Image (cartoon, rainbow, N blue to C red; front, side, top):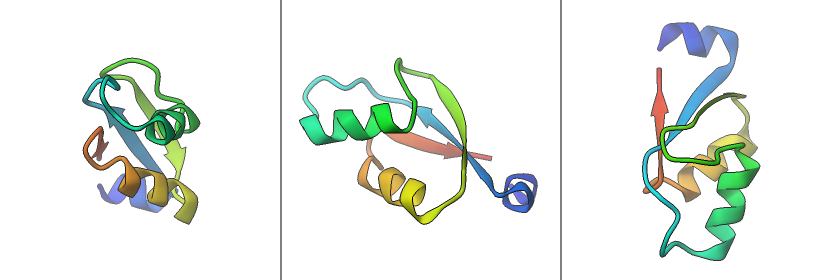
Length: 64
């Protein structure tokens, strides 16, 4: 975890499917660059990305 904090990035994994979720949340998942379950993206740690992660807390997992 210290490694990702030092580099200023955060790894995000989509752990749940998008069926039954709100349309705006689907758009937020696309904004993070996630397409399928278990997709992982390493994104720059910014307030905008953290806000999307907080909105999608039930769909994504932050990894070290």
